[in-house]
Image (cartoon, rainbow, N blue to C red):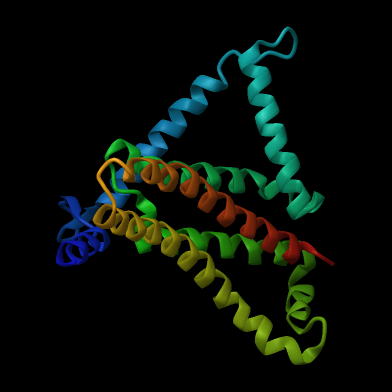
Length: 229
């Protein structure tokens, strides 16, 4: 049990990879470096996929890409509505980043989503998008009036919801990713060494992708709710 506690504390500890010698030293955490790697991979993959796109006589690669992107747009448009179509690129980007971040454990890296600072940042960006989308759609007066809907007595609850939503998004993502690690460590203690391999693949791949889906799905629902008249 002591080994389990030590491994849990080590997992929660964010290591400093290097320090930028500016303003007295700026520490760069492991989650930031892994995020840079994810950004580089996604950028390079995007450049490769969009090369030589054609209007006529398209190839198989372009057809698969257009089908995938079209399917994602159709899915998210069903959540955010027609007026929220402009916000779909963020939702796709967030899904790709979180999904890939949760898979980094397969390559020997610590997933950035195990850093509470990363999940807080993602939640704050999402809640800013939600509130700004509502403000742009309804105007300033309409945005303020929406806090008193459907009845004025709901005003305190609707205001409180602004702070509850990012907290729920943050803690759900962080808690589920960390919970998967705790379950894996318990399985390693209780079961033979061969069995955890299958569970590791489940938590690193399936559960990691599910968490990415849940995060962007809830964000898209909140955006769609903010855009409602």
